Image (cartoon, rainbow, N blue to C red):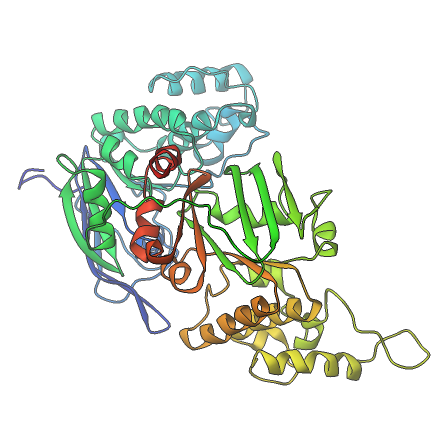
Length: 512
């Protein structure tokens, strides 16, 4: 960009604090017209917070300024005005699969007809608009029947339909995370067309190969601060990894097979479904095994596929050597598999119920005396020992769960499954949203479970946690196991470097 050219997007002094913790700190960020600018960083670096502030979801700290093509954009915690030249495409494309392209595009920009609608006219107008960008499809079929790449392009074209390309800032936030590489290239053609017309694209991704292929410049955030802005030309994959992590990373690819004395309590055999493709792993008694990766790598859904909470297309699960079928939660629980989802409020607990009711939920204690029902006193007495064991505060079993901190709520969830007993425990992001002081008690509870011979499979977005807590770490890349790290190889840097690698097949080949 020349010195006289006005930036398409300019942010200065952007900061955001959540409960005393800085998510962003004095960040400056600038994108030029006719540029695809990648925004990179590890999980928790501040990328999502920056995007949410631009979209009006969060209000920044006082003092931040933002401009679009020289005009001010108020960052006041409300969405940008409808005529503001900025649009957002997220991983959830926001399309309605049962509607056709005509109706999906009309959801935001309206139809051509004002007094009445004519199918022929609306179909022709949609065809003509898509043809401007080289897209030839049947616009009358439900878009759920089209390829995911076509759906992504439709989402982009819907977002920008009422904005001239030369006055556009398009934020693409992990929108290609679920796309296979061959279909990403199709979307890239559209982004290049927008760049050619003078539009500006902010491209957020974890896939560094995409950055090298599509981006002109890259800005890296680390711990809420801007580290550097560099031209992509001349950068390598390893250069990007070093910018993101903060230090050089040596070649590292680990092998997986290690002899273990204790029996296998959980065997996952070639599971596929969602973003996962042919994932296999084993958990031995006494182990805490970690699964991690980047957004869209498949680690987020693997545990639900194992438990039967999401439909899998292939593979099998064995608990204690016995095949678990059919693949549903009820059968899994009976087989000795326990599952604590990461979304406590919606999937893992009932906030309005008491601690005692949440602890005893999967298996009620038997009432004393000749009658079969259970009284409040007996239920609270049964739950009290588990509340005490995990040091839940407050210790009163009659307390509503909703009144507890995130850390104490997570302890209640773990106490529930410890009370039931299990052969293997599946934990999604066990310390997500948990304050630092509460984490040791959760880790101690996991250690206590493994001392009794159980195994724990833990998915986490925190590479540092995976490196510190787990005996082994499976890193998923593009839905497959990219590497299995343990011992001296199990470091935060190596976990992140594996996760940032472009293709799982390359990693697997390197480790053989």
